[in-house]
Length: 382
Image (tube, rainbow, N blue to C red; front, side):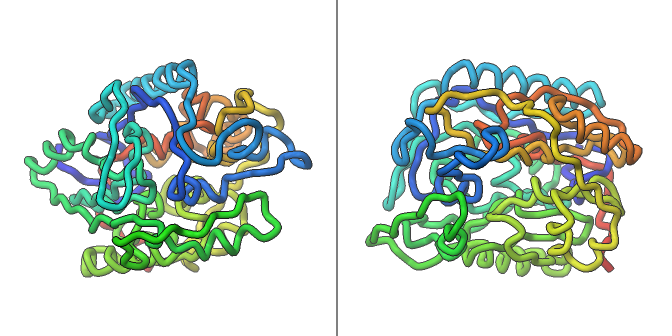
């Protein structure tokens, strides 16, 4: 089928599901710590262990490569297969990216080098805007060429008539990153300080770095979260590139970057939001939509981990659901409170297992890229 995806809820016909094959480690360095900054907790003494993330506790290193235990990767791959099978049972055609090689693969640029990670959270580095594939400029160095693993799928959509665009790639030196957001949010919070950037002969100032997961797609309207100068430059580019076809609506510092564990549009007129405070930052038209604010979990349904395991997300990762149609939603089976709340609002919930979302930083929306939906370029924010 031809590429066609304008929103988050229309009947889903085709999607790509990410891969975690040969995932061996997280690489701690500036771009990684900036990306997960809002999820870093350096002191859990006064907080429920399962409620808050842990990136610096125990023996986890603050720099270098942090191994991931093979049993977690094996179980994640089992759960990814379960996601793919659940979608196929709902008549969705599932595509998969290329797997990363079993040996360590390095990215090298004139300014830095990093170990490549698998194409798992594939929502991040691609934005589907109607009939166009837009590869976005990454925010983590180890993911610099992640979209290359999706190229066999993208090439087939291109042959069928899709447009295919790559946003400008950053040099990504330390000085490329706007640190104002993280520097402001360290005061009094459960975050660790970000060290001063190291100079490089390739410094050019702030560059565009921007993820597709910062966007909430609503037909011709795209709501974009902007928290840094890097995001603002990416949003500038997107506005100029899509002018006349889409309308960009900026929200500011809704989160550090991604929007899809803060707010998701489940169908026209209905939003799933983390809290009413989140909804207050949305465009005025969206504040009139029905809001589903899930209740707090009544029990700890997260796996227990060792002190040297990097925990990258808070409990809110399970809001990262995937709509298959305006009345059908994929939800983590470990979230009975969220399931009951969605059913109370008339949704059919498809429970799917996903155990290690806290270790790999993604839910069902993160792990998937919807490429064909039935919806078109409707106006929802007039």
